[in-house]
Length: 272
Image 1 (cartoon, rainbow, N blue to C red):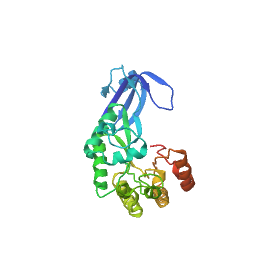
Image 2: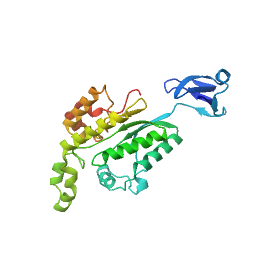
Image 3: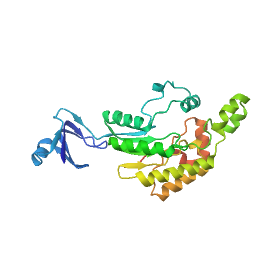
């Protein structure tokens, strides 16, 4: 079905400073076919469905390049902002919600705000339920009609703090017992499971309008082996984009650059 989107003012591109007055966008199927004068487009296609009455501002859909797919913020769950290390413990015990709820709510909030493309970056996409939760979230996003970039993320070392083994040794016995599960990780097994998960999601969901991306969550919280394998996997699949949280503190940045070089600066970028 042909569709005409009419606007009093029409912005056609973030790189084009022109503003078209009393213009329209013609959509054919799922493709933007033409942008031009409203009267001319209407005359050329008098049977097309029209959205807008000439009083609106029309612009391309916005892109949310970074979200964690929660839809409901930590503050709404009763977790206040704090220093990162303190928040990590709070986030670990936040009540989880099913992906059908969070993804659907995310679609509604984004589309209502004019955002038609969403990047969902999983924070700790691991454990026996990881595959099921990822698939359910992706399917909910797609059912909602939003364009999606989805990157399962993982940290397979230093989940608690930088140089966590040294930090663990400074703790009294009771706190040490509490912190040990966040420090003594099966880094090799987590790396294996992550790439098995990524391969499955990429094989089953990657498409023109849905991109499955690689995502070592933090440059300073994955092993060198994990980063090397991430680069190899990206190259193998034709330069699949890599999303990564860059380090923040100057000392962390220096350590990460010394260990990982330019890989530590990877982020979501490039053309769709």
